[in-house]
Amino acid sequence: MEKIGKWFYEDLPEVLSTNDSVLELLKKVNAPCVVSAAVQTKGRGRLGRTWTASNGNLFVSFVYEIEPQRVGHYAIISAMAVLNVVRFFLPHQKVQIKWPNDVLLEGKKVSGILFEKGPENYWVMGIGINVAATPKVENPLYEITSLADFNVQTNRLKVLEKLIYEFDSLEKTYFKSGFGLIKSLWLDKAYNRDKKVVIRQNGTEFKGVLLGLDDKGALLIETKDGIKEVLAGDLFEGK
Ligand code: BTN
Image 1: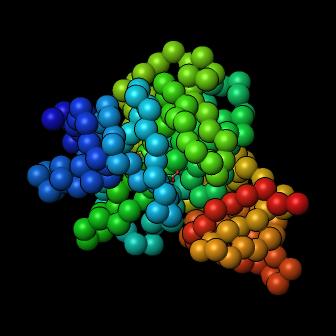
Image 2: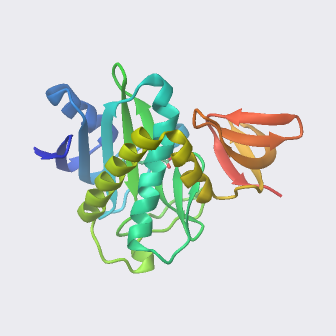
């Protein structure tokens, strides 16, 4: 096991889901941990979906304590960290965040994040970044891409190193300057900002205009019935 800053870190050859493996490491060290894996055979996505793995892609989970009132903020910070990583490798490409925390590269999904509650105030932040290959997914909800599709020459461990760096620096910024600054950075990169969107939640949907985030990190949508605060769901382009 290595130590990278405050993180206890392990890279494993094969796991079912790094979101589970990181909790095993937490039990041993009882401190913030990061676990990555070369192969992930049962990756989970948001809202009960699966996360399809291709060799060479990054599968990583972080576990750390978050005060309850800050959980929504960290969902946004994590997406910003991934966004910064993708921008570092592809500074001239369009990189955006699709709420809640998908990162889009030229409009196609390159990364997804799954937050899961751990013990006490611990939360698991599982991040998948398509580094070396674009997985073949049947009937994908969104178009998918990878860094390799844009001819980036790197590997999952270099991407992880940059991700840890970006996450730690954004967290510092957050503690120094507050969520307001993070929120405005997010808004600047938000996919479909000020545009019509459709939000789908548990089989229902509603339309509106994407206004931004509130102080908790929830999405604000202006609908015909007033402004709605959205905590979970999927966002699609509206008409
Ligand atoms: C999504 O877009 O639905 C979220 C996908 C999250 C995938 C990552 S890969 C590493 C970690 N382990 C998992 O089982 N899921 C997350």
